[in-house]
Image 1 (cartoon, one colour):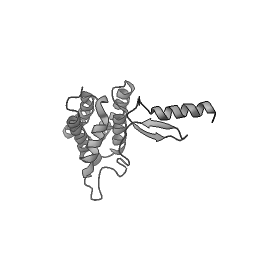
Image 2 (cartoon, helix red, strand yellow):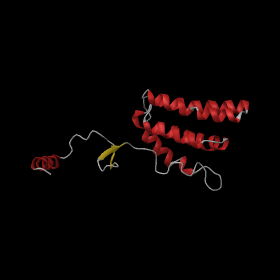
Image 3 (cartoon, helix red, strand yellow):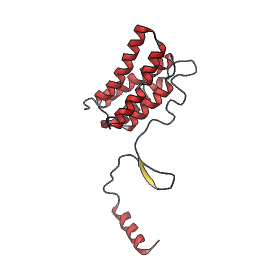
Image 4 (cartoon, rainbow, N blue to C red):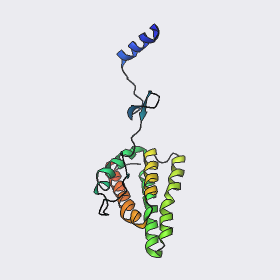
Length: 169
């Protein structure tokens, strides 16, 4: 390393990082450079699905995980946008209760994927919400997955979001 680079590095070390522009966590990328990452979904999120060995909804999806996810949406998430997506899911559920058409119900839930892509493209929802919908839609492949897994989990996330951000936009 040349002398001027050493001097510059010494100056930077003494000054510290006064204007840290990112609030995310620092880590190293593949090339060894440090970067800032934004909070994401919890490690191993839905890796085992919605249910335990007895077929019951995992309690953590209604409590700790739901709270962490809702909190990670942050002030970048608009309450009305969140409720719009949840409302679509509930409307699909009501339609299923009336018609009994399971395939249409599953397809209506799968349509959330394209809706969240549009909202993300217009910068109306944060990346974490986009990821949340994508992962859940991918896991929701049966009537049980949706009615007993995804919908109660989504409801808990909406409730915790309202708790963490009571006066959001």
